[in-house]
Length: 88
Image (cartoon, rainbow, N blue to C red):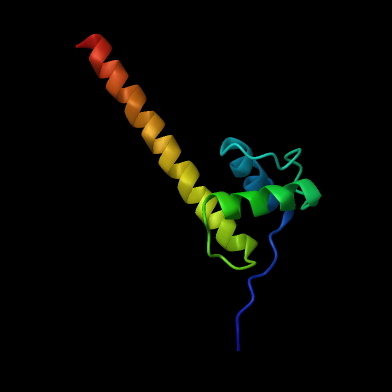
């Protein structure tokens, strides 16, 4: 038996749309609806990042969340470094 991930709910789709936008893709409006623009942006992200996630939108949500977390951490570290440099 193969477990199938439940589909993303509207809030989760909105999160994916926000992630895709922040990563430079165009999922259309962040409205929580899995429309054709969102699906195209997902497909583009899968190709761009060479993801082997099958058809799991949940895996994509987890992957994009890890990318966003890494980008946010890098930005915070850069800001902290710049702040230290300016005051030191």
